[in-house]
Amino acid sequence: MTSAIRRATADDAGPLAALAAVTFPLACPPSSSSEDIAAHLANTLSERHFQDYLADPDVTVLVIDADGALRGYSLLVNRPAQDPEVASALTLVPSVELSKCYVHPDHHGLRAAAELMHASLQAAAAAGGSGVWLGVNSQNARAIRFYGKSGFRKVGSKSFRLGATVEHDFVLERAVP
Ligand SMILES: CC(C)(COP(=O)(O)OP(=O)(O)OC[C@H]1O[C@@H](n2cnc3c(N)ncnc32)[C@H](O)[C@@H]1OP(=O)(O)O)[C@@H](O)C(=O)NCCC(=O)NCCS
Image (cartoon, rainbow, N blue to C red; front, side):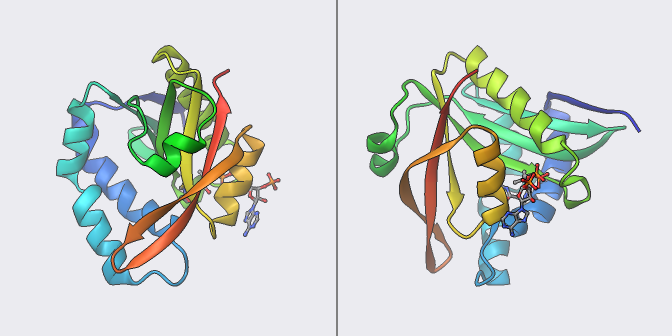
């Protein structure tokens, strides 16, 4: 199998939505209801939403393409942080948001995520960022460990609404390489 990281194109919108449906639930705390997860997928991670992301000049989507099958993706947003909790926590500006970073569970622990992170940091630097920031659920221990290994440190926290529940995310940042 050959695997490569590349920029997503409009043709990837459908496969990205399918991959998001597999990977988004893995980032949610165990208490999340299936209804809230399904609503979040429909409201932010459908094929139509990915079409919009892919058409947005401030957004970069990278995919891990394994012989034509998408096995991971990241989504970077090159806009100033709107959330006041985030804006006040960041120490590096301009900062690019690593809004999504998801790898198919069959590829966890195999360095695929590290390679996706490396490419994402390079893309953030190419977009002119001094820093990269992200929000990660405070109960997502695996992702927090992965981001720590990737050079991120906690600079604050923010709230994230999933259905009726308010989740608490850590805000992490690092300098671009
Ligand atoms: C986050 C993600 C991209 C990381 O990729 P990965 O291949 O799992 O990352 P790695 O295996 O390199 O690193 C994970 C680390 O967490 C550790 N880990 C695994 N489960 C853990 C747990 N329950 N608690 C603490 N650490 C844990 C692993 O041992 C590994 O650390 P090590 O290399 O020191 O042994 C991937 O797990 C993923 O897509 N998860 C689902 C979606 C998600 O949560 N995305 C992030 C949203 S912000």
